[in-house]
Length: 411
Ligand code: ADP
Ligand code: ASP
Ligand code: MG
Image (tube, rainbow, N blue to C red):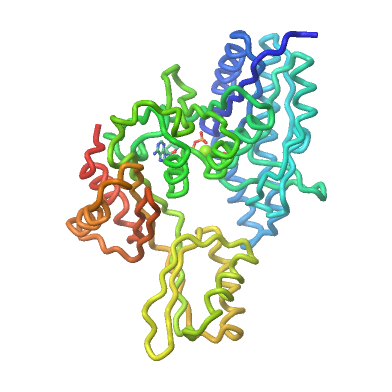
């Protein structure tokens, strides 16, 4: 039997496999990792904008496509890229096999379009590794207990990669993307953004949950739970990227700034429900109904009630807008509220940093920066290391740039 080598997981996003030349370059990179003496498992996303294009095609057939069928459609994107990458690696004379989520043993729940990974049965992947193969796994997809294809939510290939890394006890998980790592804000919006060397899972969780789409939120949750070390780096150069790891392993804490990053999320809709009875149980019924439809709620604000009548506002994701509308129409009678409003012209801007736990006045400074730029704050939420504000969508770029500058993050 072969001596046991260390396993590394490499994940390549859509832009990294955007065309056949890029796929060939990824193949070379994978072979280099194999030649360095590792066992290699690769996770890939669909090529370029394939997933967007498939969603667009479906929207021409139906306004509210059945979610199971949608997953059947979207999963095809990753099936194309795993086959092509495997061919590219084989063409260079290396043993390689591609596996769909189902073949790779990725078991999910039945929440189509936003499924959670329940378990990975690594038998097949391990068998292929033992046979000397490089293994290519389709990102973003798995199989439910009833044998149907389910997808993990937009950006979900990161989660496949981390879950596979955990299931194989890999040395680390490399996330190859179109930027050099995790930056102090989106480098495609603010050119002064700087690359962060090391981040704790907690900080990365807050960055991902508040909109830094460079890593899928569930991927970071998985990495934290299973202590998978992540290395986010560019697929177009060999530069060292950003390491995401346990806080106790990060030694350069003295140099860490008050604020680590500024994030934004355009994918928000503000829902206001007017004329609700201000009695016990109303919020529970309203949010219980949303949860039953798997509609995720982010910020929530309830105003001071006047004469026993209250307004509750909350934000949801843009893709849930039709579902939320249908639900509110149904609830209007049973809950007995007067009216509701859906406002898609909002966005969320956040500042994240472990340093704010020990420095008072950070929130006040954020509000002041926004006020000085004539930006109205409509909702606020905080965690120990994050402050988020809901503002008008057209003010987001200004907000991100000035916050980045005011908190001295400009490179
Ligand atoms: P992939 O297709 O490789 O999964 P994504 O498009 O999902 O890539 O994520 C990479 C993108 O995330 C970058 O191109 C960048 O525009 C965006 N992004 C947003 N915030 C950040 C951030 N703080 N650091 C790095 N990239 C960010
Ligand atoms: N192809 C999927 C998407 O575009 C999954 C991913 O890229 O991570 O969302
Ligand atoms: Mg992504």
